[in-house]
Amino acid sequence: MKTVLITGATSGIGLELFKIFSKEKYYVIGIGRNKKRIKKTLNSINKNRKNLQSFYLCNFENLEDIKKVFNKISKEVNSIDILINNAGGIFVKNELTKNNIERTFQVNYLSHFLLTEILLKNKILKSKAHVLNVSSIVHKRGEINLDDINNLQNYNAVKSYAQSKLSQIMWGYYLSEKHKEIYINSVHPGIIGTRLLSNNGFISPILIFFHKIYGKNTKYGAKNVFEVLKHVLKNNINGKYFNERNEEKSSDYSYSKIIQEKLLHISEKLVKDNLE
Image (cartoon, rainbow, N blue to C red; front, side, top):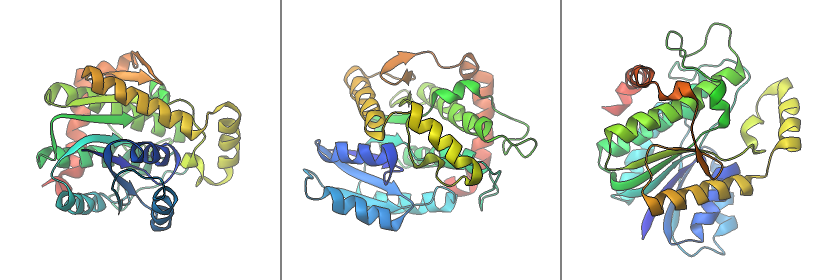
């Protein structure tokens, strides 16, 4: 039985993916930050589950938590076949985490960078493993602010979100070249109405209204992610970007190997204390 690890698995697309995989022939491990939602999630699907599942509490706003959750997971399994980097958010206010990193950049990208690198370093992600980053088409509005990764000057929530999702894709491209024994791809699941915007103060109702009008439901997004995953598993596809279920080019900017390498160096520097 193959093992799949899903981050952000207590709400939105992550929760729907957890449900989908629980009905398939997988051992499913979820990561979430809310203990009550973890309990609710397990209780809601245990009646219909076909396979074993487990859940771990982890706050991606704290890099130390990621190292701790890895230590727990590594005691349970010695390999992960599929990693879905899904957890994320968009935050109106420019807030730094306890690691002194801008919240959007850390939660959406850097935490997944650290988790994946730890799994690779400790050989939990082995040959033929698949990594799928749940990104966004919004990445096309982004660039990497190499001189001010925290966007302390002229903070803009959408630009910060775009930077974080662009970072996911660019790091994925770099990783697919560096580790040819594994497969790493990125997917935009569609414009989805999720809990992504639920903690954003006065602007949140406006953004949520937009998503309700134009967005699809989370089951639609999760199904897109699942179908892409089945496609890349079947065909051993590596280093690609998918818009919903269709493979396409990401932004021209995302293919810059120079910026990919600079992003990697910044990322390694930011997580080095938790990667050793």
